[in-house]
Length: 113
Length: 115
Image (spheres, rainbow over the protein chains, first blue to last red):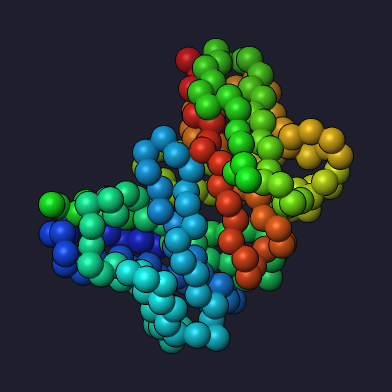
């Protein structure tokens, strides 16, 4: 039962352009959302988060948007850089268990120089 | 300030052997989470522990898997009588606070291969 879904397994973007990664969730109880970035042979690294009381959170080149009515969030990276090439996971928590994060299956981003 | 440490990074076991995976959380973190990533899948929650207590093991397989986080020393994920389907990357994460809000910091993972 995949409660957090990333339907695009891969994305290619030209350097300097915007990368948009999407994530959908099914559980309306989720109230905290995060994006993680993962390089091969390394653990996921926290990137940015957003709580359900907000609809946007920005940190430098990274912005996360949350649309609660659509149960959808997206990560915008602008401008994209070759070093951004990695797998990006979205995660959600707050379904009442308080303990676990539910992860999507990841989107592999390639930024072409 | 060392991050989350996991060892070994790679572990090869034959079917039927035991696998022991270790995780040392970040300094000041008393919450530990174990996740498993099967090939082509996202990370799946297995268990959440605080010192000497299992808080949530809803993601743990019912048999052969166990976890502990003793008062002293690292957290251990133990898999008895491993089978080929246990081959995966096992990630440990730690946090200062329980659940959210607050991010979990991940270790580099242990890649288990069962032959």
